[in-house]
Image 1 (cartoon, rainbow, N blue to C red):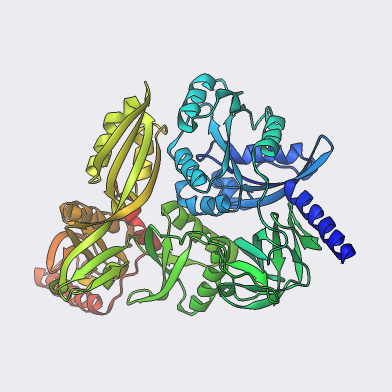
Image 2: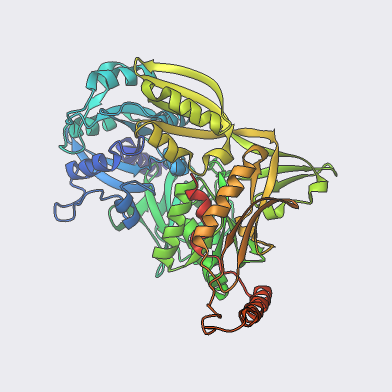
Length: 613
């Protein structure tokens, strides 16, 4: 009995020793504040990568990320750091900075005990910095403030230091001055991670509880799930089950996340790793699910991540109708790697069978469309994006409508509510007037303003989500010469005077171009749509009438003139009736052609709404 007990104490000491030296942290910041570059320096300092393998933005594995200079996916990597004779394991989860990928940030934060808050010394605190910080504070993370890019000529170290102190209420000496370009301050950051971020607090002897925070699809090995062990431990060969789906698997391989997957015999409590169990069906793995043992299951699942709330919806259809099943498989594989993407099957009279997809923003939509093409070779047609509305009918029903074609008859609609957001804009004071005018034009209501310093102002607005999903961010950047930062979150629904605007081509409605819009903006929007479509639709052998209509009322019209052959060219003399006879014959032919002819709408026309000024 004594031998068994001493063996138990020894194994417990080994486990606690492992847990005591583990640090799980993420890097949070606004877009373009230097997160990826700083992560490169941390990898160099811990010799996680050799000089030969090192490259800029090493954690940004997608070509799209390098082209656009932004992080799209959160990445996990394990580093080993030795200090004062102790070996530490540092698990870094890099996060995106753009507001459209805030769901990625929430998943990274839920898997950590601490975070580096990186602030650009040349730009100061921005809207997304504050938003991500509040997210980290909600999860009780230890915050290490880092002032990046201090080597730049435009760096305002003392000014930005004061902003960070005011925001966090920390001691100025706690702020680490660093440069991702030169590597200055990286050793201080590593020491701060060890000293200030607490070790994981799980129970190594409890039943296994591991939280899935991401997954990827591998064509040869199936689905690879990334997890963090909250309690217990997991070994290769263990029989495991996914708590929420109830499905059972064998852990064929477990390991840690370096630049490549490295197999291990065991992943201890508090650490981050991956599991391969030969899963081929994407629907079986859900981000936020809990992994536990079959023979000794945990009593409850870990509180997973918040359910993603799509901000806008768009129809995604295959160009070729017989590629529908391929598109479904591609979207399922993409959702493994991008849990914020949601989709449901739908059909359209004009476009056939496709999917109604939910996105977090326009950039997210653009990235998904590009990834479908690059990674899965899927050519798709994307309809005009729109947001979700609540329709209250005269029969006292409430309908969620994502698509204008899903609206009930106008006689059955009592009223419509649209989603509103709380927007936070931080900008230089000199652009104050232009930003206020833009927000008023977008039906915004000022709820508060606060001067962060003598030349920086924070504006809080309540405005309809439909007004900001198209071109608001671009216009805001133009007005503020790139200085303003913008962040928002959904606040609820409000009643609105909305109408369905239909676009008709030769009296036939094109449901992919229809939209729900505020009555005051319908006329201008309809006129601009007709003008834009006139530019984009190629000329045919007959006239094409482009009309914008609200119900039965036509509010705008443009005509694409027919390509005509000069049938009177051979009449070089004689009576005028000869020419009239030929022209009448041509007119009848055009009329008949118009009745049987089809108008082909190019893909650029479906996205024309985004280009409207």
